[in-house]
Structures are given as structure tokens and as C-alpha cells.
Length: 203
Image (cartoon, rainbow, N blue to C red; front, side, top):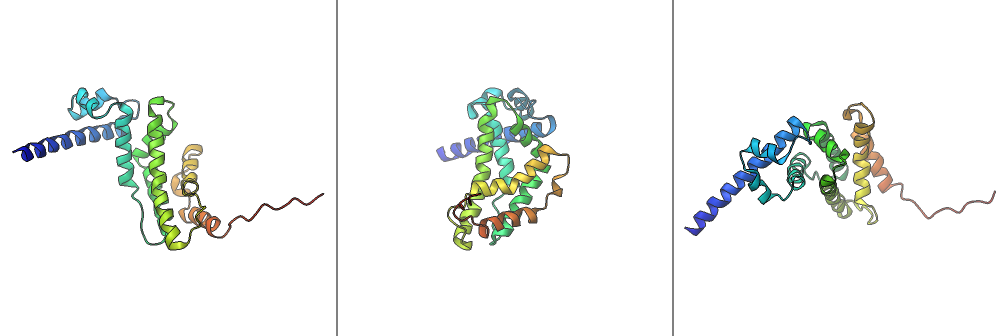
């Protein structure tokens, strides 16, 4: 009997969590970041706001879970068996995400000056860096990537053109050539390894 009660409780808990996350996701896409408040989520989900606060201690922690779940689904860690293909897939997945309705929400979060969302911004970026680190660490063993290659810098170089194009121009993200970006980064990683600083010749 105890096991049955536990399973039933867990099932209801999971349904409540799903209802809240789905409601928050819908509101973010339909109404934007500012309008996605705990009262609005409670009304949309049918879950009392006190129950929401028992599971998530703040609006920021709830939105963090919603956005990280959406990003994890949209940008899984690629594993094609080839580093170049993995990085191209990663680039294209990030591009597709940023072009989606949830991408607009992510840009709103990144541009927000709301201190309560600072942890959300940090969590989002750390999660993306961890994805790229998996790809690079795998490549250290399979492709001889040097140990001093910083996976964070590689990721920033891969997705940087997308963020620059989105934030500083009106051009569609599809105008950024994935193959050009990835090949440029790979050439720098594998071919253009810097040597010791050259001494300046006296004038």
C-alpha cells in the first residue's frame, strides 16, 4: 500500500510540475518575459501560486528550469563521430533555437537588467559551455585536440557570429555560413597554433 501511495504522489507531483512548466513556456512565447509572472503562470496552469512557490523559490528559478529544458531539447549534444560535423550540428542547432519563438525569449533574458534573472543568464551560458566541452573533450581523445585548447573560447567563437548578427543587424541568421565559421575555428585550433612571441627588431 505504501508503494502505491508513493507512486500516486509522485505521479501527481510530476503532472503538477509539467502543467506549471508548460504554462510558463506558453506565456513566455505568447506574452514575453515581463508578463510571465507567478500569478499568470498559476492562472494558466491551474496550480495555486503557493504550490508553485513550494517547488520553486522564485520566479527566476522557475524560468531557469523552463528555459534550460527547452534549450536541452532544442540543442542536444551532437555525436556524429566527427569533430567538424559535431561543431556544424551544434552551430545549426543553436541557430535554429535563436530563430525560434523561444530564441526571442532568450535574447530578452540576456538583455534584461533584472537582477533576479542574473542567475538564469549564468545558468543558461554554463549549460551551453558544458555541451561544447563534451564535444571538445571527446575530440581530444579521437582527433588529438591539444590540451590547452579552451572549449569555452571555441564555443564562443562558434556561436559568436550568430549572436553578433542577431543583436547588431537586421540580417537573418541564415546568412551566417556554418561551414565557414567552423572551418575557420578548426583551422585555428589545429593548424595555426601560435609559437613563442617574436622579438621586435630594432628600428
